[in-house]
Image (cartoon, rainbow, N blue to C red; front, side, top):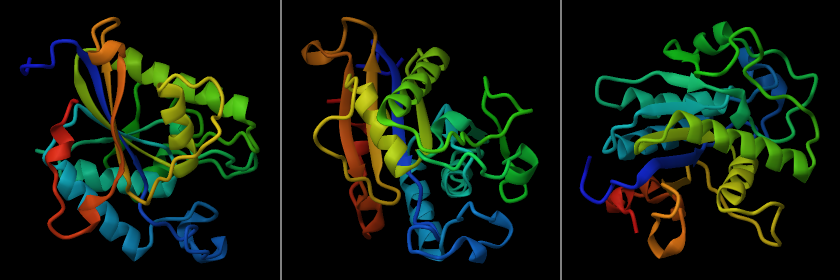
Amino acid sequence: MEEGRENITLELFLARHGESMGNVGIPAGANGDHGDDPPLTEKGERQAALLGELCSRVAFDAVLASGLTRAVQTAAAIALRQPGGAAVQVHPLFTECGVAADYGVKTMAEIRSFCPFAEPAPGADPAESFVYAAGAEDDPARFRRAGEALAYLRRRFSHGERVFVAGHGAFNTVFLFAALGFAAAPAFDLAICNTGLSKLVFYAPGTGPYGADTHLIFHNDHAHLAAGGDCSFLFALK
């Protein structure tokens, strides 16, 4: 165990996907094989590659993503740059908010057609869709799902693991609020840029600095998008 990490149960690196065709208003009909699930633009692919280079300085115990194309592509850029490579573990809990209930099924075969090293995350049902398509979720439903996603991660990882999750702007925001103890949407929002990176550190109960067992170390850092961006913050604990 590294010095100073004895009481840490999980270091979570949470990122929004790179720029997608949907972000720049390209209609679904132009998404080719991805249908109504917009993939990354060329700019988004470059953003994801830069994030992957930055995150190559961290050895992740797992790389996860939602089942949406843009999140899987972003996670793949991180996984490819891990020492020896890594799988992209896909779980529907991290799907963006408001995905239409009639959204086409996203099977693992479909995901592997563009990310061959994707696999179902432990606990995900490989027979089900890898996209959580509940339609218009209200805030209580979003917070319930965020709580489920948080509980899933805390169950799986409790020995100081470093974990990366590629998700989405709206759901990542709700997830961060839930992780920080908000029971409902507060009267402010969080900006999250494409490939903006946040880091949460979870401590064993009663052991966190300053009397808090969940610490938001940084939020929406996108220094990797500028040449020569400082990466020392990746390892900061407090």
